[in-house]
Image (cartoon, rainbow, N blue to C red; front, side):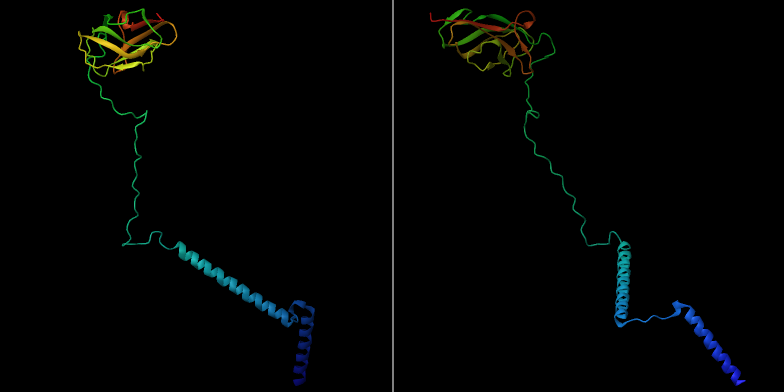
Length: 229
């Protein structure tokens, strides 16, 4: 019986050796010390990388799960900037307000009219020397229904300026029906010989210009002859 058992054990051992020799992947390869050290280092690096990744994942989850507006009962509210107004300055697009003295109903077609009554001095064809200074004055009547205030002007509408600015302010108020002398002072005859003309209208503070005659289109005239004699 014992011999039979020994025989079975020997046969089983031979069979096991045959199977192991036929299957190469069951054979444990021989590894040098250097290769073994490299495997150990790689394993440690992998474990370290895995640990770092796990730490980053944990931090990310902690970050996204924190409240967006943490409670801060003692924190002051953010200051709201106060808008500042741009300084204003007087320009042509933003002129100062001009208060116009009432003159009457300017929409009335009879509002602004006058009659020419005559030349006070220097009538037409007055002879003057080159460069001579002079004053021109006319008699007129306010034949309209509106008052001429100090905001009215006598303005050049055509012809020579004779060295003037082309504008003369009224020096007195003229009520409807009143007569007045209108003058342009400090005029200067041209230096060249010849005959010269100049025409003047009355201007209201509303921008209207008017003369005398039909449709108030005639201006107060100056006509001088520049000559040596």
